[in-house]
Image (cartoon, one colour):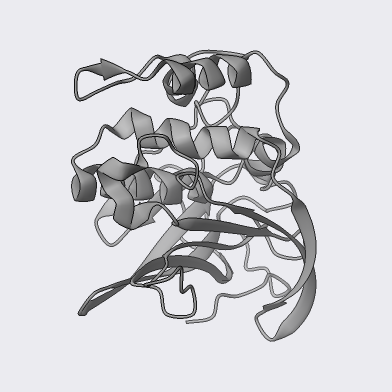
Length: 257
């Protein structure tokens, strides 16, 4: 199981949440105490929505879910497509595959029923924070997890999904806003994470976004952002090795290309 959830099992991300992290040779006791407190509590609603929900329920086998990724940096912009291939009905076997421009991507979500694209996005984000700041990966993992464990609001919203208005649930967190160690990476103190989930789309992930605000906390003009947005679903007609191709489903939703 992944450490994106609280202390039911302390492996992977949960070990990061429970650990006392060393930064620059010092132990930050206050932060460690908050982690210990969080791991001893029940799973927060935001964590349950993102990590413990069966997002792929109702998705037929051999269905590909497509997500557009747009990364904006100073003087640079990068686009990508992330695909989640659901192999078993409802992802009952937990064998959905994630891939991007580099091919298949392993995500640390053993035992979690959630859409693995959430873990893909967060793992990429944490790796980037580590690279940009020189900080420790598990420190950033734990800050995000603690922000979700603090029971942030889950707000009903109306969003657009492939030209239609749908009901959704939105979670917004700023993991580093009150971080006692944020002086070490002050340019990211205001970084904001937004999750938009909707049962109206296969896989339930409508949008995930991170934004680093501009001067004076200006989110209208972020200096850095990354957005993953749902594009559509496509029933695969290519059989897996040794398996018969599924019949074409004329009613299956098709991806926007």
